[in-house]
Length: 323
Image 1 (tube, rainbow, N blue to C red):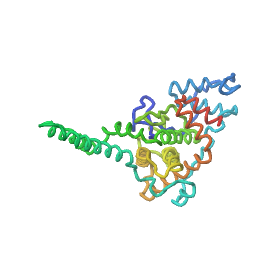
Image 2 (tube, rainbow, N blue to C red):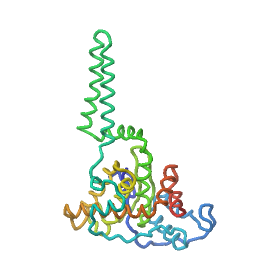
Image 3 (cartoon, helix red, strand yellow):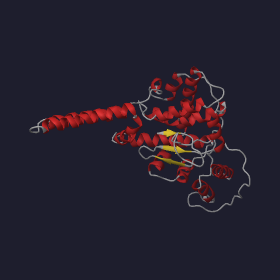
Image 4 (tube, helix red, strand yellow):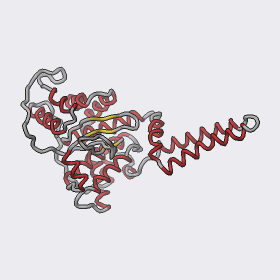
């Protein structure tokens, strides 16, 4: 479950789940033609679909801006102004965030469950194999037992190699699909409300993300020149998934990648923030994102359903506007 920034030419990770800022004026603006549409009567969505298909963030924003002008994309960029302020844990609790004091603590639920299962299973099989006759009763349990040691060694030396297995194992938790959909839909919705065009998403195991792309913002990130306003906007979208889980569950599971992404944004900003300022930014971003999600609960749930049904980006946008 993650959010990051992708270059226009490549959608590789930070894994690079993208993140766009507000775009500036466009050259050669398209002429808008109103035509009938089964999804939106009287409104032509073909230009928007074409822009999404070509991964053209400027064209996507331009199309959505014009759709808003003709009265269709009313939710698009409806919450453009973001201003940071001091935020306390009490405010997060009042909003409805459960166990707010533990939000920044990375969850080890999936990792622990995976390791417990591996160790428990191999231990049990080793006991059974010990009943084999002759030398088999010695060598087979030894080989089976070594599996746990190998897994632990890999986890210590190169934990990334285990993530695919852990991700697949976590799908057995009954709340897994809901958490994934809730988390990624929050990133999608909050970005849309802030005016950040979405170009793709995935709920697949190990590939959960929402893609947004913007050349200008990407250059600012890589050059370490994010200003306060841009950092605040990025922080709100980055913390949206965490906030959505916190509003629903007692324990947040998918925050690790989001916190890593937020820290990356903080490290690329000017001026540099102190540790106390970083902590406050995180709390404020969770509060702001959580407020947007809570105030748009029906829209969020409609978007979750569409994303769970593997709807296209355009269908997700329609779900937001028609909820």
